[in-house]
Length: 512
Ligand code: TNX
Image 1 (tube, protein in one colour):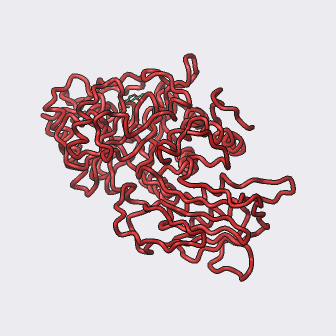
Image 2 (cartoon, protein in one colour; image 1 turned 180 degrees about the vertical axis):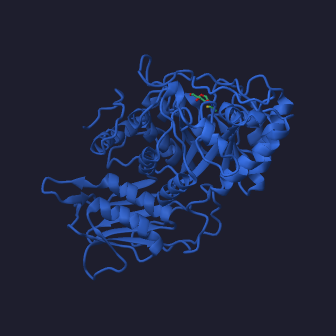
Image 3 (cartoon, protein in one colour; image 1 turned 30 degrees about the vertical axis):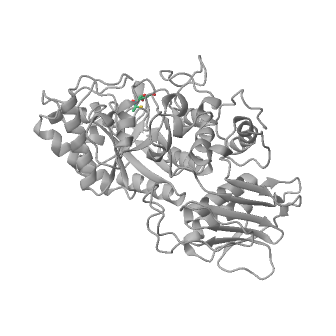
């Protein structure tokens, strides 16, 4: 594919056409016209960006941003409940002045910059939000202080409906204010699923009404004795709301039946000895487990999954399922089955790490692929039998892997992951034999054994998050490494302006 240059939009849109050499110059206080109240969030974000003001109606003859929401006003599927929501009920859109149809899908948008202003059309608030993100990347400041936009037509929609980022808040606690930064960063890359790994051996980070001892006894610290913390119901509701305002769905994970030492430390009845286990602040994995034969185990699983489902407006709950060593396969299958049943009883869909593919699964269950060293046969078989695969290959999308040997942060069990490694792979052919329609999407993951601060976290995310986001959003024939490395170069200056720490990969000639 030819190396293409043009305005630096990441992820690369389906179509971006330069219409003239004359940029559109924004006047101070420009109107952002949003007649539909559901467009308000996107309108406010845009107004903040350009120093404009939100209006419900346009003044005649004045240049303005015009945000049109063409979806049904009462569309409750999106956002925030379902990143994979069906699209059958969405209306066909009228063709705009630009004679370009809006592509299919709840998140599609069309954006037309011309002499009289900027027209933005989408079916949902999420689609409008993506258009605002694209506008933010197209805006250029001049020495006189005026902002300009190139005269372009952008027609865009994502390839995959699930474009996620998983964050381990158990090994090191991530404060709400820091997660707020990460949520905005996700929106900047048009990601739409925030997966929170809320529990592990070291800590339990979410307060659940039926089990108060979990956070009371097991959230006070992080790996190595670093400070801990937990989310109250109010904290969690705030996070969910902030994410929803950015078109992002929160998927909570309570990791069972392994990675449960924090639960066993809080409730002795979950251990065969009947006594609480010791607190664990190391970074080994695989040593802790629930026991199917204990009477307390079933009640625990039903309680915690019912509680977390009730707090979560999104349609998915993640049950973990990874790395349980030394458990008989029938006991593992029974415990996974109980957790999955509890999630379904609460009206949610089940997500689990790849290991659950060895157990009987209900059709539609989401299997998250991660360990590239494992035999892929069970995942391919699960996909063929009706499971949906979420792709998080460790050697591509594990953003806690070191960039190179000797890099001070991160682990290296899946290898070293430079920017190009995160970019240069194809979801449809990653698992040979998997039906293409079984691929639900792509998710980056960042585990926090070695990451203690927001700076540590963003240094591992950036620039690789931009690469994974483009894999998840952009059509395969729109993806090209040389083109990407040219466009991503412009983002460095934006990260600097936002005072974010990031890794200046030597694979890119950064503009700073
Ligand atoms: C594997 S990915 C794990 C985590 C670790 C991570 C470190 C997965 C399902 N399990 O427990 O934190 O590697 O990269």
